Image (tube, rainbow, N blue to C red; front, side, top):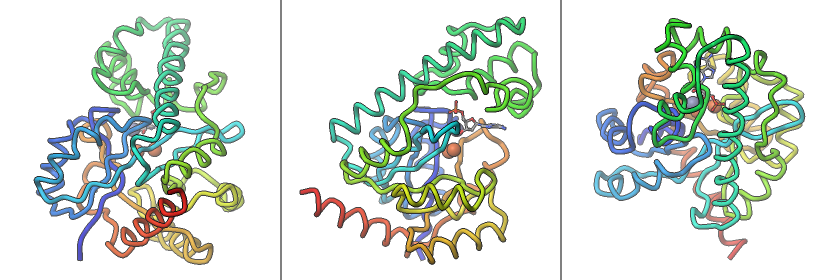
Length: 280
Ligand code: AMP
Ligand code: ZN
Ligand code: FE
Ligand code: FE
């Protein structure tokens, strides 16, 4: 049975490994199918396409989008979209700007708390990657304010700590519309610890196609609950390790271990094919 990992990150967002390094590791773990789902960017995926083909790894187009749902921020995985769809590409460009603007506000807030941190330092940490809170966390570690990324989130960067900072991310509704127009298939990322059953039902009713049932944050019970729900609601089952490389130690050991069975990959591709046929 071919193993798949449909949730990974590279240096194009907050991952530690560049696309080629990630592919090498995927081959070591004998993954048949991989999706690079960087935060709000497909640059890592685009870089990896040729190498993946040469290595015989099936690489599905993917991206993990941060979207706004009421007061909440929701992560939605989009797969198998047309990567040249103008509206989709523009959406990702807007998301990138929204990230920069949000980080400027975060940096100002940290400065107002007396911390010595600048936007340039966070940008330098992000390098070629789409900027995100883990990059700010790394600066805080380098400066000795915190000892770990986890501590940085607990003390300064969690959604609760940043509650009053508004983001300009796309709404879930708009993301679903644009993604489906681009032939994409959507799955609610790591729903486990984040939402009530009722909230999940509401998100499903907006038109999300699948649930990320398999994720390192889900214990066996949660995995079973979500898989059952997906089957009842005729939703796709997706899953992956959320591998970030050294950036997020908690999940990293699960690369190659938390994987998705190939029957779910077939279902995903089938839905994507049908959607493309309807568009064209
Ligand atoms: P952002 O993209 O700026 O919203 O940051 C979200 C990313 O930060 C997630 O994808 C994780 O990689 C990381 N992250 C979120 N919460 C934590 C945490 N408590 N500890 C470590 N990393 C975290
Ligand atoms: Zn991340
Ligand atoms: Fe996420
Ligand atoms: Fe992720």
